Length: 224
Length: 66
Image 1 (cartoon, each protein chain N blue to C red):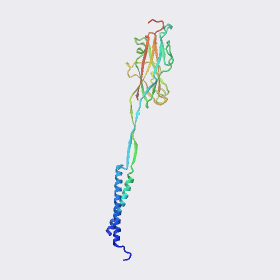
Image 2 (tube, rainbow over the protein chains, first blue to last red):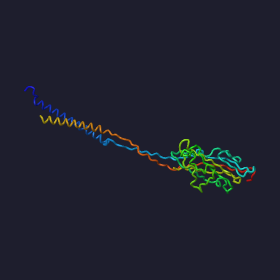
Image 3 (cartoon, helix red, strand yellow):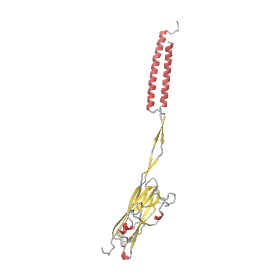
Image 4 (tube, helix red, strand yellow):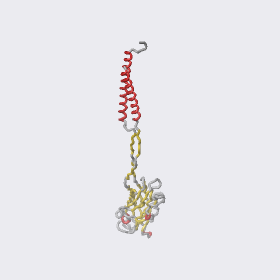
């Protein structure tokens, strides 16, 4: 019959198409399995949430930027009728030979939070100046802001300072007062507002024995 | 002959289905990761000390014995 495809040709074409189809299925199946395996290994959940935690460590760090007062060597000139001599870090020097000291101790906070400051001294006037017996010498300190606002948490300069130490007051020794004295209960840490000034004043009795004298002042900072 | 053609058609359909599934898996397999910053905690390191010194020397008053 004209126009009719021979049955063997149609059969061959069908077989060929079937082989092609089988190959296509095989390739698709391999592709699918490969993609699925890759999908699972890279995370089956399409949206994942991770957390990055960080810790801000609070630093408390104080430092005496001026850590020494030294009047050098001198004496109370009794031949001038003096019975004592007052020396302080504001330039007063009532004796003979000692240095005029015009700079007190400066304590700076390098913390990242406001802190409370305690001061202790290794000795009092008897231990520092008189040593052998009480001759009436005195040893005092005075605490003020070296930078305005360093001890004023509410914008009131000096409002957190110990008011009893705004003028010279006798230093207590650490043995009697191991916790020292709170000089500022809110010491600021910001730049240009983080310095306290500790002025020292001693009154040396003419009866004090000759020799070297020393006292250690320790500042301790604690979080509020 | 007819049966063979049906098989071919079915195989082609399977091929299409697998291809579509493969595309879906590939597209949906792209992970989205969100980064969330947790709450920060503050740890206090403790107290800090600093020391200073005050000193002088008392010399003998001139003219006094000793």
